[in-house]
Amino acid sequence: MKTIVIVGGGAGGLELATSLGEKLGRRKKARVILIDRNSTHLWKPLLHEVATGSLDDDIDAVSYRAHAKNHHFEFQQGTLNGLNRERKTVTLAPIYNADNELLVDERHIAYDTLVLAIGSKSNDFGTPGVAQHCIFLDSAEQAKIFHQRMMELFLKFANNNEKEVHIAIVGGGATGIELSAELYNTAKHLHHYGFGKLNNTSLKVTLLEAGERLLPALSERISAAAQKELQALGVEVRTGTPVTEAVENGLITKDGDTLYADLMVWAAGVKAADIIKTFGLTTNRLNQIEVRETLQSKDDDDIFVIGDCAALMQADGKLVPPRAQAAHQMATACKKNILAQLADKPLKPFVFHDYGSLVSFSKFGTVGNLMGNLTKGSMFVEGKIARIVYLSLYRMHQAALHGCFKTGLILLVGSINRLLRPSMKLH
Ligand SMILES: Cc1cc2nc3c(=O)[nH]c(=O)nc-3n(C[C@H](O)[C@H](O)[C@H](O)COP(=O)(O)OP(=O)(O)OC[C@H]3O[C@@H](n4cnc5c(N)ncnc54)[C@H](O)[C@@H]3O)c2cc1C
Image 1 (tube, rainbow, N blue to C red):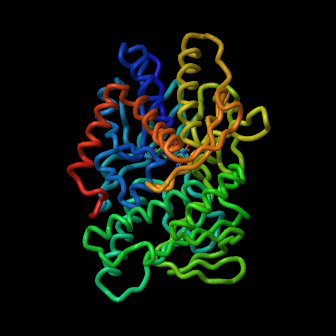
Image 2: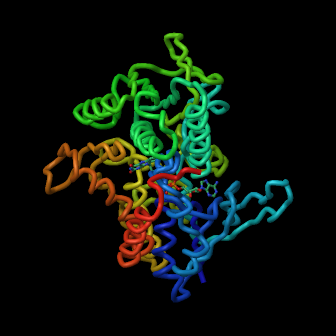
Image 3: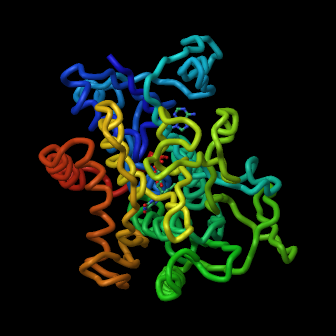
């Protein structure tokens, strides 16, 4: 029996493991193994909501072990730290507990087909001080650290004579914008939970972007709408302001100004993990693995790469963007190609269909563009329709993991929880 190993149970990898488990694992036609460094999965675009407490990841996270049991694949927790293409094995780092006690030794797992889906992480472009002083929103752990520090700041503010809480966010892409808006939503709620002094004027959020406008990858109309919306909330938007250094409690800009901040987040660009460079596969300057249109690595037919860590050049000369919608589409195409490869049939080229990009300002609004046959190109959207489409991306991910019936039940439980629980995570 062939073994398919998928490393990375994120937006792309978990969907792929689920569908291959159902298709092959259920009837024991192949062994499907998913590896992830964490024990639970949380859809990455929700991290800014975990950071601000709008979402409780204890409720929304999916246990890999439980999901594997329900969908006929195996789960191994571990961090990929090596690949031996001759022996066709991946190496997982040893696991230690908080007291440095060895729990699991280094392991080698054999594969016939390997799928790399380990995503990406923030790119600080080597800017001094950023790794020490800024928080990245790359994982649920980091989002929870942000949440804890934010709550400590608000507690200090509510009980002392602090005048303002300063939060600086570097990066005017979707993550920075959505986090800025979500913070004002948080302030609104905390006002009702004993943090009475806290309101939109006491929260000072500064969003710094090196480029001349927010959301440089989207149209000028969308970026202007985003800037207007943020400024209406109270966010200070500073475009054309590259950050050259982060220090304790501050960011230094190219002009030499120091911006004071109690909490700093770096959300300016992504790159794939450095470990990828040791695999002997062709990579680009962002450490992404170069793939052919079948999603196989350029160097190895038995290695597929999907999601943010894949570099796939499109017909227009641009790379497929590192987005959840691309990871979702790649997971579907990769499944078909793995099945074709097992059946000795020809593999099909993957073509990315961009259905548009939407940016959410928490409960305050959503803007973006929709693309497709119906819209005859790109159509600017905002308001309720935009909000519904934005939310549907996560619902599609949930449906790919749990099926439509269970996703419906999850929605119902979510509505009940909204009645029973506080509107944000307070601890
Ligand atoms: C705050 C935020 C908001 C975003 N909003 C949007 C949005 O609105 N729309 C959109 O399209 N995209 C959005 N994105 C981008 C989107 O989240 C990613 O493009 C998408 O998650 C990529 O999917 P992936 O499967 O490649 O990787 P991921 O979803 O990141 O999954 C990677 C998985 O690999 C695991 N892993 C990593 N390294 C290792 C290792 N060495 N060993 C074992 N396991 C490992 C990780 O634990 C993780 O489970 C957002 C991202 C962030 C951070």
